Length: 252
Length: 252
Image 1 (cartoon, rainbow over the protein chains, first blue to last red):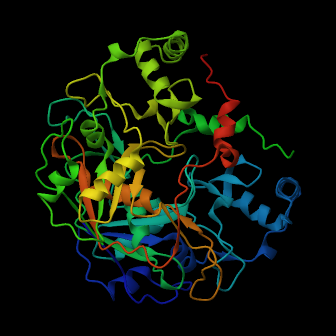
Image 2: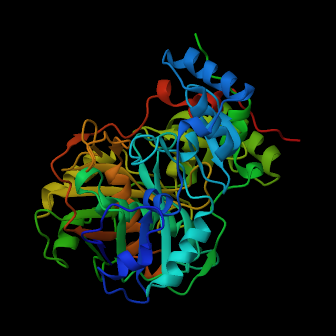
Image 3: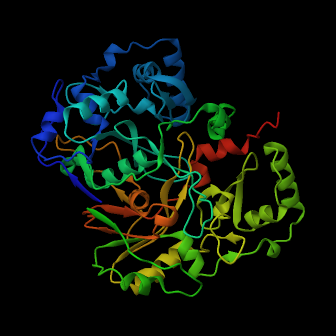
């Protein structure tokens, strides 16, 4: 398996064609996996926004005030408003906002980026990353596309790449019922392949002025296995999420 | 960046030399990263055990009884005893045992494998995976070694590869203070590189009778960045872990 960055990509702007910009730079093969950072998907899909377009309502003002108490830092209620509008659930209110995005991804601040936004204050995540991935996939010679994000996680420090949308591939590889070389049934059953591909791509993508938002994974063999597209857990089976409902940050 | 499985590895046994078995099959280069599955590290380090060597004490009997009520399945209190002995904290008691291993990794059942154990009932995780990685690194021409595991996570279905021990590389790449091509400070600060390498390796390793426990990552460039070895969060900054303390599974 090989990974390489798509070279010399320009800064992406609203309306740019990601398939064209990639195809001009790489001879893609059908079994390539093209991994595209959500930031550039958002830029071409015009998901740049200004704080002024999110006038804060009562709930956002409450959330921002709670965050100020918890962190001792000034918080803009318009940013809280943007997070609430982009979210379908709020898992933690302090000391940061842990949210469910409209498409089921659990991440801080609904994945809104404030640090890397030409032409605006905020970069929102794509509305429907699966649809974004499908549109890119329809325009390139590669049959598999993943829209990636980076986010933190419980228990372990640091961010790692994850998939938020995918097309042409199942999200996971299901080993259930298969056996090891001694005939014992396998312990690991479902492998989150798109997340592992996103993590691998993130190693090559880098960040900052040397960073590149599109990475090709070549010669990844999914193999002859069942696939599954359920990547985001139901609340019913997510005990961590249930536990967070009964928990509240102690302001001290 | 390229990844390839070390070909034709035999079944590993107690006392085998992982460095020798790898070096006989691959011409390693200094900047290669060798990723080795914890299962084979455990086998060569004689971490196979029988349930009979874990006579259940009062706490294990309590834990097993609670699991039986929660799941409706028969549970062996000796297995609970093994999990407790291998753990330094119990984050969830039902409907499964979520534990902190002695080296800080949070995983189910202290990572004890019951499904793939020739010569015993249980395969325990390596006692000190960092030391295991350092021993392997000292015996191969590659300068970087990662001991990998697979485990599930909150919010998302499926297992993915993670690092539990590493040598010759920092755990994470720190982008703090660096800037993007437009001079804006970077949003992502700490990238859990060893976890991303473990995830990438897991894509190539596979499972079952076609699985291979050692994968080489070639031409991964850490770059000129600060590094950090703090991979496992302190409880103080881990709000999910704090939330789990106040939560209890409802037996219904």
